[in-house]
Length: 603
Image 1 (cartoon, rainbow, N blue to C red):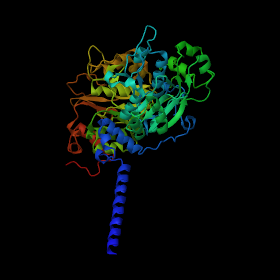
Image 2: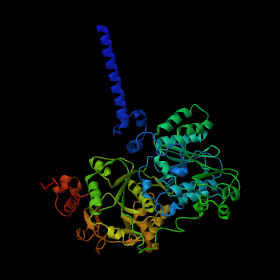
Image 3: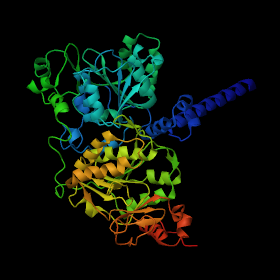
Image 4: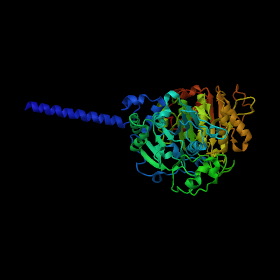
């Protein structure tokens, strides 16, 4: 009898241990922790780069689990909700909706895989162009296992290099053999970096940013081939497919994908004469089409077709309607039809702890400038107690993006220049106010935003002979699709990788010289301080950088910009409250306006 009681106790104790263990695993799996050692998939997680680890954690925090946001089986028509475009049909002409920056778990990358030993044709050109104009991704990559050939007529690939600033060609080493199974390689890239994969036969007909809110999704042609795959980094469903792919024939990969992923629409195949198969055959609302041999499109074919489907007429506009032509949401300089949106963009790449000076900049943006919203575009390497405070602010949205390393095929060598590439992209698409992290607001620029200007900047205080002047874009106000931003971005085709000052100081001035009506120069927008000597542009001697020029920060300027170095007063809150002089007064003014002086006193 006693032995039976002991057995019962041991059995109950065993059940309790099992229950506690299961509860612990469930708890660890549900909490988005900051430490790799607590993750169930720790071994796989350690294989990621630091940036990929950060985005995987960020995605897990925003959307834990594997639940599809758009349930399987629902059609594209039922799920697709266009953004607040001025024109849904031509989104590259108008302001893109801010919703594209919010609640995404898939990075804004698009890539193709090139493995064909053939000429790059207009069909291929149209496919890449549709991805660029309808999605405008942060990066658009062609992973090439073979040479991309051109001839005297088919210069389409070279044209793309001069059209798309974000286009990068990655020539993969032959020993990687990506062309033995290009689809498997594409899945590996998606697993490693996340993003959207498109087949070269696929041409988008409308934006598909809604895919970036799903873990893993796919669109097929009506012949069953892959048209589009979208996935977040280290998606478990995708990893299950990759683990089984080595065991099956490459032709069966699509079948596996259909069993493991949300199917979002079908991209009908077009392979006949465009006058028949494009204009008459397909009439329903479409996400994309796949252009299959023997159909070989030419630009004039698109002009000759009388499109009966509004969806399919975009094929013509993708090629013929450029940013510099057709309708635009931007009016003439001085027109008060539209204000510059008061959204502030900060950009940061590489590992750093958010400093007290950067925290001051943020406080000045929120409490002095009184910005409506703040977007911080970064690779999620920022850290520290100030970062936790800033990133959790209700008006702040943190947007993941990889650091750019090329623009129009030119290498971006200086880390400081990466923000130049990104600010051109952000202001073009969304407009707003770009601000360097070393800028402190002293007055709100809201009056400038509503004055009817397309874009507002200030001259730089340094001499850059033989240039008469240059522009400093550390504070940059612009409407979406402002003509000056478009022109400057287009001129970055002549990007100089080794010239530190040319691309974002001297080149913008050249654009301003040729198109002065596209830009308003406000000499009080920012005062630049170099080696702790400040140089207000409205002072006649402002280019004498060896000597400070007088100004009243309380009344004369909108912001102050410390290019190098940071004042000692901004090293910490203790340094500030114990500091004296103009810089200390500015810092204390910001803290006081932000309501953060409670409990602080000068010691």
